[in-house]
Length: 271
Image 1: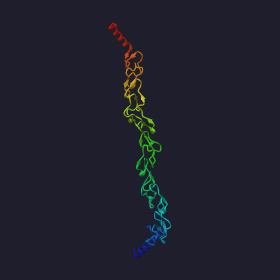
Image 2: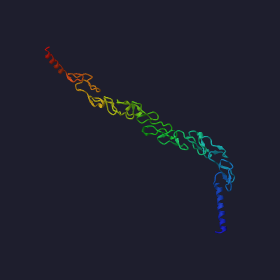
Image 3: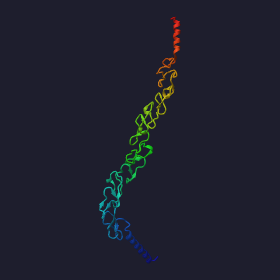
Image 4: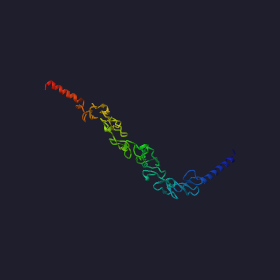
């Protein structure tokens, strides 16, 4: 390639470069002029006219004809057209990029605090875990309240508190049965975890023993229940008297046997 050819190519590239600058502006922001070496007159100007230096666009965080005005509280970005989101302190929202400098309001996360907490979490920085909300429904991302109530066995706005001793179920509205130890009643379904008091049976210990049985788990048979007029399902004794023809504490003796013994005693004594 001859020298004249090289010069022709160089002039062509220079012309293209100048045309690009005239159309699109300087490639580096904040400068103007034919060779893009002169700083824009306004210090907060990001784009100025290639020939006159008149500001045509402000740096993020500023506005005004000469970019002399800082964004108002709660706004940020180029021309202050963006709105700060859920910053814990709106005064601490960066005017440049909207970053919440002191963190997010309860219920939100991310640098810009625009993203709600994931399902199952809530509070500041989404660090809290939802309680036992009904049907796995999400709790409020702000304060953790279970919006549809609690799962069986729990109570309170957050559904993190077990039912009080002696109660169980949905909203803790059910009363525990005759558990051997009332504090061993399941707060969820009322099952007596250590068994029933004497006289009761079933998982919830709410069912009386059948007639003729008593004791723990109704495993004992009442004494002479067929001769008692009423057998205690707790002790097995005939607390309500004997049926006709029977006597004794347990109604175990026939009345005629007692009379026969008395007659034999009279005959032997001669009286």
